[in-house]
Length: 119
Ligand SMILES: NC(=O)c1ccc[n+]([C@@H]2O[C@H](COP(=O)([O-])OP(=O)(O)OC[C@H]3O[C@@H](n4cnc5c(N)ncnc54)[C@H](OP(=O)(O)O)[C@@H]3O)[C@@H](O)[C@H]2O)c1
Image: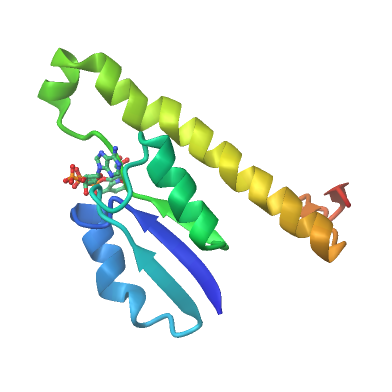
């Protein structure tokens, strides 16, 4: 069964995903709120990725309070941009390692279906 990590799962978008999660019986959702899994906390990120290998991640974690973001732009940038980049990087590293282990071709051009990278 494919595993899906959902970050920031307690609010708007996360709640919508929680509602439909049970209709996807072939997917196992791991729904994390900001206390279980803080994307700005490297230990929290590492602990989660060390304990489980996820196939997908739906990142609903976001700093969405616009007025507050104007007062604390560094914090907003950290959650909405900087940490998303490092998060994506961790994911790509895991994908590369998995692909290498399995010896499969994984990256194909969407239209032509040509291999872009292979292992
Ligand atoms: N709502 C929509 O209709 C919609 C549609 C398309 C795209 N989006 C996008 O989806 C994302 C989420 O939107 P939303 O409307 O669901 O926002 P939201 O209701 O404000 O929810 C944001 C979630 O992120 C969590 N969060 C904040 N900082 C975090 C951190 N450092 N680590 C982990 N979780 C953290 C919050 O947890 P706490 O409450 O505990 O702080 C909250 O659960 C945004 O990027 C938004 O642009 C939303």
